Length: 474
Image (tube, rainbow, N blue to C red; front, side):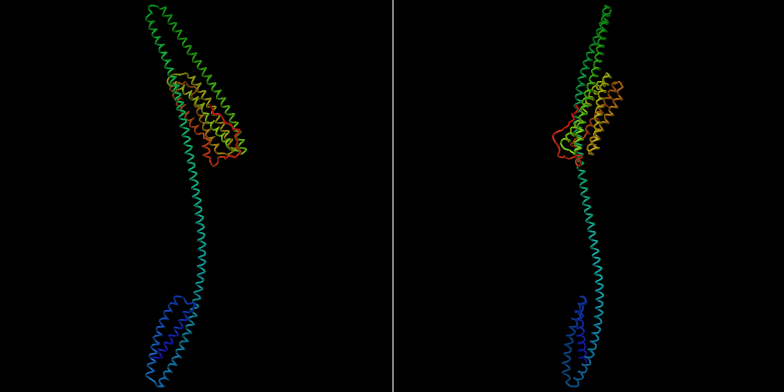
């Protein structure tokens, strides 16, 4: 009985090994399950070896202990029935294994379908994610390009600011140079005025000394007359009459000299006005000729050395129009300097004021006429640098207007010492305003630097002829 049990167990073990081997060979079996079954097969193989060893030992024992036929028959019958039972059980187990395999296959197919669906969803999600990532990269690229463009724009703005700052520094340096030159010229004029004043003062001192000597002589003569009165009344009367006649003759000479000086001053003022009128008329005529030439070249779309030289000459001529005004200011200041320390002829000072007013009026006419011409030029060409020149000339015109109004307000007064000092200081102030206003007039180089981006370029039609230059006002 023990032998049959061992053999039945061995048969079942063989069936289990066979069934497990089929499951391992099934392509739908997962790797993890296959590894588990490999372990089970190894265990069953060890068990099989042990059973086979035990069965062999039992068979030898039975063979040695019982050699009868009946015993062998019973053993055979028992073994046959046991084999039938084992085969039946094996068939049942195979049927169950087949059912389990079918269910397992169905489960695997369902899992595979779910896995395929999951793969499809994962693929769609991956494509969507890739598309979103691509869109994100495109947006980041666009943002990066926009940032680069913004940085380039900032760099360009910084460069323009640097260029503008450099231009302003150059203009400031030129302005400082002009102011230095103006101060130098002013110092020279003040030195000349001081020399003239010192010369005039020496002349006054000399005349005062002569007057004192004359007065001293008269006093001594009067004293002598008193001493000699008792001796000779006739001689005293004759001498007094003679002295009175001399004093009267001297006063007549002084009045005649004052009238002659006033007449000479009128002649000088009239000649200066005629000379200024002639110069300004010549300047206006040449300005019109140059204006016509520039307009002609602009209409023909020409720009080059010729027209640039005309502009340069035009600006230099405008800068020189203050010379006659400063000359008239110097003459008036010299008269006022005398009036500050002693009583002077107010009529002579008024003549110098008339001369200065005339020069200021002519200068204002030049500036107003030039502003009108420049406005026409701007309306025709649209060049921004023309407005810069026009604005500077308009400033000079305003200074001329204010200066002339001030001189008109002081014309009717007598120029005693206090008023002479006040007018002298005010004339000094307006002279400085004149210098500042003329310094503001731009040069061709400063205009080319300031408007470098819009400055006209040469058309290639330039030639060496047809130059028009305005003479500087001396």
